[in-house]
Image (cartoon, rainbow, N blue to C red; front, side, top):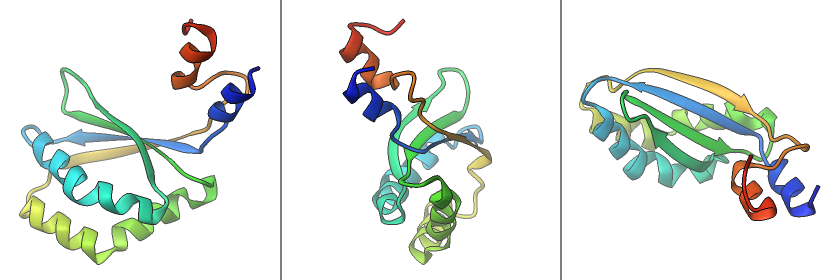
Amino acid sequence: MNDTITQLATVGPYDLRIYDVLEGEMETLLQVLAELALPMMPEYGIMPVGFWTEETAERLFQISSYSRLEDVQSNWDRFHADPRWQEGLARIRQDRVIVKKVETVLLRGLDSLPSAGSCEAATGGCL
């Protein structure tokens, strides 16, 4: 396998967070992310890779990368304990619940396959 592909494929670990958003609250969640969460995440070793939504549902998908698998939960615990996060979230939410549920899936890259962003450049196409 190409050395560049191998390097990209083994970066991580990652987590996929799936936010089930209450109807009508997606804009509030996006505000929380843009104004509050994104500026703070790198301080806690949380490196956002990207965000996606579904066309027909109130769900937001976030993938982030970390330097070590062992640190993922403690990074988030420290992030959520930060008074700036707690105060800013309370200010934006204004006592409303905006997310019903958050599901987290830990992901790791595979040495044997390229990551999604690298396969097209390396092979001229994916599958």
